[in-house]
Structures are given as C-alpha cells and as structure tokens.
Amino acid sequence: MSDLATLEQRAQAELAACADEPTLRAWHTKYFGKTGEVLTALKAIGGVPHEQRKTYGQEANRIKEALTAAYEKALAAEKERALQASLTANPLDVTLPGRPVQRGRLHIATQTMRQVYSIFADMGFQVYRTREVEDDHTNFELLNMPPHHPARDMWDTFHTTVPGVILRTHTSPGQIHVMREFCPNPIRVILPGMCYRYEAITTRSEIQFQQVEGLVIGQHVTMADLKGTITAFARRLFGQERQLRIRSSYFPFTEPSIEVDIDWPKEDPNADRLTKGTGWLEIMGAGMVHPVVLRNGGYDPAKFSGFAFGMGPQRITMLRHAIDDIRQFWGNDLRFLRQF
Ligand code: FA5
Image (tube, rainbow, N blue to C red; front, side):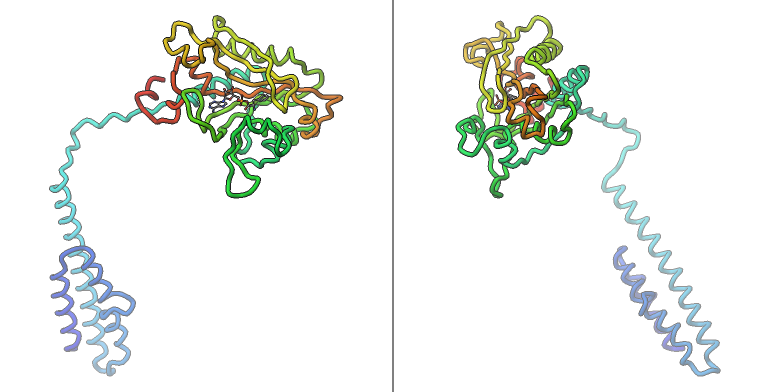
C-alpha cells in the first residue's frame, strides 16, 4: 500500500513538471505503456495476500483513474497553451480578402498541337502515340536506311548507353509501329511527339522539338491526295492569304519526296534572318511511302500505296506569330509565355 502511495506521488510530481506535449506523452508511456508502472501495479493484485487484496485493488484502481484524469487535463491544457502561443506568434487576420488564384494557361506549343489535331480530326485522322526512346533498327533500318547509309547524316543522333537504343530523331519510326499494328487495314493517322537531335542550337533549330507525322495507307492513294491534304491543312492553319510552296526533295523512306515551305510575312524585320534571305520557311518533309517501307510494315506495295509527312509545330508557331527565336519555346520565360 505504501508503494502505491509513493507511485502516485512520484507520478503526479513528474506530470506537473512536464513542459510540452512530447514530455507528456513520454510520461504516459512510462506509467500507462504495456509495461508501464501503473499497469504493473494493477497486475500485481494477484500476488497480494488475500485479506489485503480488496483494499489494494481499490486503491490501485483509484490511482489509475486519478492519474488518467490528471494526464488528460494536463494534455488538454498544453494543447490550448500551444495553440494560443502559435496564434500570438503568427497572427492571422481572417477578415482580410483572399489572394486571387493565378490562372495558368496552355503552353503555346500545346495550343498549336491541339489546333493541328483538330484540323486533322476533321479530315478523318486519328492520333497514334509511339515511343520517344527507339531502337536504331526502327528509327533507321526499317525506314530504308541500313547501317552506314549516308542519309543517316541528315539526323544527328543521341545514343544511349545501351547499344542500338537511341532517342528518336524524328516521328517517322512510328510509321512502322502503326503499320505493323493495323496491317492489312487502311490507315489514316497522325503521330505527334518529341524528337531529339544532336545538332547545333540556332534561332531555327533546337536539340529537342516536336513533330507531327502523318500516315495514310490504302489502295489508290496518290500524290494528288498528299498535295490536297497538305494544302487543305495549311489553308486552315495559316488562312487563305499565306503562300505555300512545294519543292522536290529526298528522303530514303519516301519516293518521290517533297518539302513544304510557307512564306514569311515580308513586313517582319526578322524575315531575312529567319528565312536566310529566301522569304520561305520549311515546315515539313513528305512523300509517297517507299515500297521497302510498305513491305517492312507488312503491306504489299503491288496492292497498297500511301503518303507520309512530318512537320515541325515549333516552326509553324514561329510562322504564325512571327516568333524570331525557337529557343523561346523551352526557355520558360514567362514574359514570352504570357503573350499567348
Ligand atoms: C524529317 O524528320 C522526316 N522524318 C520528315 C518526313 C516524314 C519526310 C515523312 C517524309 C515523310 P526533317 O528533318 O526535314 O524531316 O524534319 C521535318 C520538320 O521537322 C522540319 O520541316 C522542321 O519543321 C522540323 N525540324 C527538324 N529539325 C528541327 C529542329 N532541330 N528544331 C526544330 N524543328 C525541326
């Protein structure tokens, strides 16, 4: 019985000395944890001689109740004290008007991509997404560029540490993926995404840029379909007044191949610099899908034909908004981004 009295006095004294919540909680563990002193005292009831057991039990339970009540009171008081202290330290004026939430906006690159999707959707094209990390085989070989083919020099490549695994240099390898998935059905898709080239950064060229590939495969698809599709697209995006120029070109995966330019507004003081004095800016390469590529995709070139194009949305956006430096796109300068 005297042990119980000492226990109560000691516990009350230590409780009164607790200055914050962590010490209060530590006190609780010491006395009420699984092996805590109060619980141990309660468990000891069984060992007390029979005649004293009732009194001992009553006293132990009274101490348990008293200490629990004292602890809860002390904890509540401490929480209240901490709240008042924090309110005084960081006064909060709830009557002040709230700060307006800043509204974000879509990046100009995203806005252009969505316009491109919408125009092609009206022409019956679906969006097909493919990988940014490609293998050399699909990025080059299946597009009719065997190892050491000189045309590979057109695409300076970022290689990974895994042999044969590269960052795609253009969206054209997507043509192989989509053909192999849908063969022998007809295809009408656009394949948007990021491309990477290990080349010098200039006002017109970045090492990371988007492309939108287009691919149409069917029976009796002709060059006239390609020209009609591209012209309809350019008219929708740039309006009737802008000039479109189609030149013959070379790509290993199309035959014949073309390139498409749009005229730069003559009144723009940057026109000469950005068009290298020509007045035109190239926006895409295109052509009729090469028979080797059709075969690699699973289609018989005797029965099927198709056209493909690959355009650069950053160049298109530059043309539409007279942006004089492609580096603005990924520069994260809010003064630039807020204009759109
Ligand atoms: C190609 O990449 C071909 N794959 C396009 C193609 C697809 C041809 C299907 C035939 C059939 P090219 O390297 O010219 O071609 O790039 C196509 C477009 O991507 C360019 O017209 C330009 O708009 C954009 N582009 C190319 N390089 C860069 C760069 N470094 N920075 C920004 N845009 C670029």
